[in-house]
Length: 118
Image 1 (cartoon, rainbow, N blue to C red):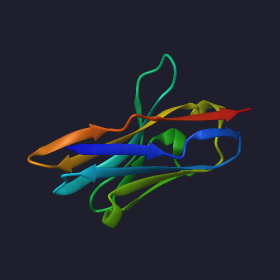
Image 2 (cartoon, helix red, strand yellow):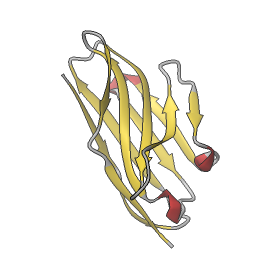
Image 3 (cartoon, rainbow, N blue to C red):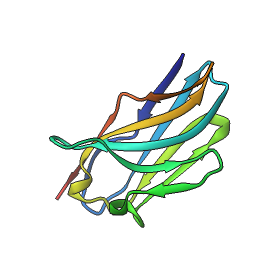
Image 4 (cartoon, helix red, strand yellow):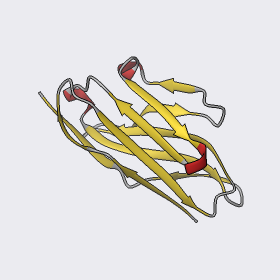
């Protein structure tokens, strides 16, 4: 099957930066879109940023101009560069991958905690 593993979370002060990485591995025929979602305590999971196979990107309004998503197709990896972090960015960040194995399916990572202190 497909394994999705995130890394790069941690504790940072407001105004600081972090870079998240997410690698997909397994019996993958192709990867379509990849994205980052986040879930803060007591809130629903929300889209942060997404990148298609053709590298078209879209972002949540709250992170535009501060976060940048990119991917390395050779490594089946997606990155999220987060700059000028704010306390409201504190959440568990999840990687979502749409991959084709036998058919197309969505796979999630286990999540990585990002905490921004004021």
